[in-house]
Length: 175
Image (cartoon, rainbow, N blue to C red; front, side, top):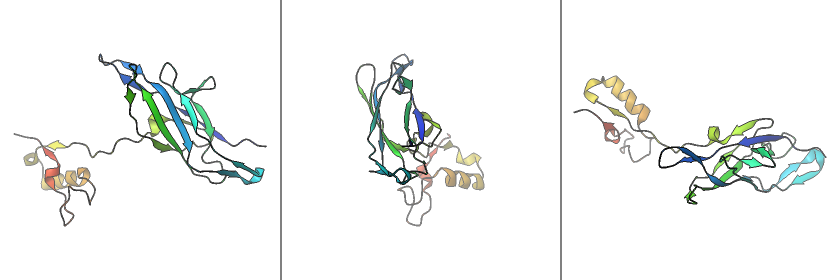
């Protein structure tokens, strides 16, 4: 039987102490395949994917089977069905004092023959940021461009009934 294609996932999880120095977290990162079954028609086989739990080593890095990172079945292996699926990555992380460090789960694709660094693919918390500027010093065109760029999406509470951005959603600087 031919083994499915694989990819590797790496990641290091740190926090800071009271002095601002980086310190490793401890815990487990779990990779759960999202499909209930993965078929290998050319091999007349059915894979029943199970979650893969990977502990963090003393440096806060993924470490499994004597190696840094974890090798997982590739999510784009064309000999398998389905293709283009993802793993749900969930976390049970703890600081050096044993306190839970919350981290939301997310999906990740693991293409064959690649190394995926979780720090590169983890989603950032959604934010439009905070814009500070002095309106008196900007032209109407520049102010409109800033409002269009930094205002929240239409349909958010920061738009009026006509769909026009409410300027008071921005923080204005100045005197």
